[in-house]
Amino acid sequence: MPDVMPDQLANSVMAKFYDVLTNGDDTVPKSADNFFTWCTPAIPVDPSDFEFLTQGFTGVLKKAAVDQTLSASNGSSSSSSSAATGSTSGSGGTATATAPAPSGLTPAQIDQLLAQDTGRLYMQAENFARLVDFVPEVSKGTTNGFAQLNVQNNEGTLSDIYDYTMRMSQVMQSVLPDDIVQKIAKFRALLSVTVTKTDLVTGAQTQVSQPSPLVQAYTDKMAAYDNAALEYNSHRIDAMSASTPQAVNYWAVNANILRDKVKAAMDDWISNGYKDDYEEIAAFIDQVMARDMTMLKAEYKDDLEKAKLTGIASGSDFYFTSLVPGSFATSAGWTQFTFSSGDFGQSSSSSSNWNSMSESGGASFMGIFGGTESHSSSSSSSSYTGKFNSDNFGLSFEICQIPIVRPWFKTAFMTSKAWRFDQDNPDSKGDVLNDGGSPPKGIMQAYPTSVIFVRKLRLTLGESSGFSDWYNSQTSSSTGGGGYVTFGPFVAGGGGSVGSGSAEHSYDSGAHWDGQSITVDGMQIVGYRCHIFPKSPNPDPSIKAWV
Image (cartoon, one colour):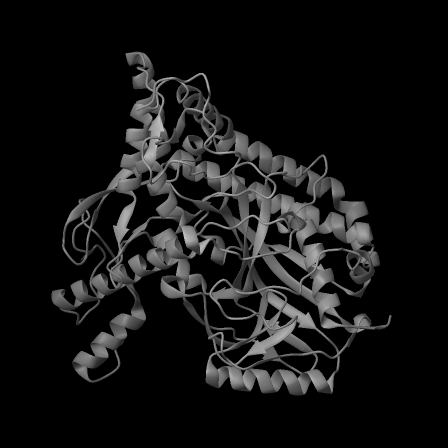
C-alpha cells in the first residue's frame, strides 16, 4: 500500500472506533439520540483513582502507610505484614479500626492514618464528580462521531444548570390522591437510600442520597450488556472489513456465541438487574408527573441537597457522582479493539475529519501526531508531518464504557410536559434547556451518560528514523515542560496536566517507544457517551395553573 499521512491513519482508526461504539443491527440496535464527544487529548487515570467506588468513604490502614509511620516512630523498618481496615461509625463519625491494630501503632496514629485515607477517598470523589460535571455542546458535526470535547462553560456546569432549573421552574398545580402519594413514596424508597456523612473539617453530619441496591443492580447489569454489545460489534466490524483472515473466520465460527452473549446479558439485566421493574417505576413516576408535580419537585430538590458534599481542599460544594460497576478498573472483562492495515481501506472512506480539534481547557491540539511542551496555550508545539507505510501500521487496546450514576439528577423531570421556567421572573423567562432545533440551542442541550476508557494501548508504526527522532525530542521536552504527545485523542507519551481549574488532572503517561511501537499500558479516558435532550421545557398547552 502507499505511504499515508498521520491524519489519514487517525481518521480511519476513529471511523472504525466510532462504528464499534455506535453501529447497530438486529442484535445490538443503534441509538438515535446518543453521540460521543472525545477528550483531546485523553485523560490518563489510574485504577487507584476510583477506590472510592468500591471502598466508599471508609478509611483503611494500608501497609505502606503503616510501615512509614512505624519507621518514623521507631527509626527502623516495620515488620508489619498486613493491612488492617477501618470504618466510620454508624452515624458517619470518626474512622476507627475494626481489625486488630498493627503492632506498635498508638490509637492516635491509627486515627490519623484512617482520617488521611478517608480524606483521600473524599478527594477522589470530588475530582471525579467535577470531571463529569459538564454540559457538552451539540454542534452540527456531533452526530458524525468526531465531535471534540466542547464544553458549554458560558452557562455553568451540569449541576449548576440543574440546580437553577429546580429553583426557577414552575410546575402544574394539582393534588394527588393519598394512595398515589404513598405509592410514590414506596417507589422512591426503592430508587435511592439516605446515609449519614460526617464533614471531616467541621464535624457536621449531613444526610446524603445514594443509589439504592436496585439502581446499582440495574446499572451494573446495563454495563455488562453494553460491554457484551461492544465485543459483538468489534468482531462483526472486523469481519465486515475483512481486515484479516482470522477476523473473518472468527466471526463465521463464533458469531452465534457472541450473539448469545448479548442476549444472555440482556436476559441477566432483565432477571437480575430489575430492568423491567426499574423502567416501570420510571414510567409510573413520569405518568404521575402529569398530575401533581409539586410534591415530586420538592422531593427532587431534597435529593439534590442530600447529594451535596463539601470538598476538603477546595472548600466548595460538589454533588456525589459514581460509576457502576465500581470495580471496572481492575476487571478483566474489557473489550479488545484492533486496527490493522486491512482495516485502512474499509474505514478511510469516512467523510469525517479529525483535524480541527481543540482541548476544552484551552491548550491547542497540535496535529494528528502532535506534542506540546507545556499545558498552557502559549507553549511551543509541533506536529509530525511525515508519512507511514500503512502495511506496517497497527493499533490495539482494550475498551469499556461505564455508566455515570447521578442519584440527584432526575431526567424524568427535565423531559416532562408538566413544568416550565417561571414566566413572571425576568431572570428565567425565555430560558430553554433544549429548543429541539438541529443543531439545538439552550443551556443544557445534552449530558454525559457514560465514560469511555481504554487501556493497554499498543501503536505499531514500523521503522521510521524521522518519527523516532521527533518522538524522542517531544517526550524529552515534555518530561521537562509538562507536555504530552498524542495520536488522535490518545495520549502516547509525555506527562503534565490536562483540563483546567478544579478538573485539572496531572499525569504521567508511562509510554514506551522501542523504535517501532509505542506502548501505553495505563488507563485513559478518551471520551464520553452523551444523550441529547428532547425539546425542554415543552409544557402541555392545556395546563392552565402553575405554581
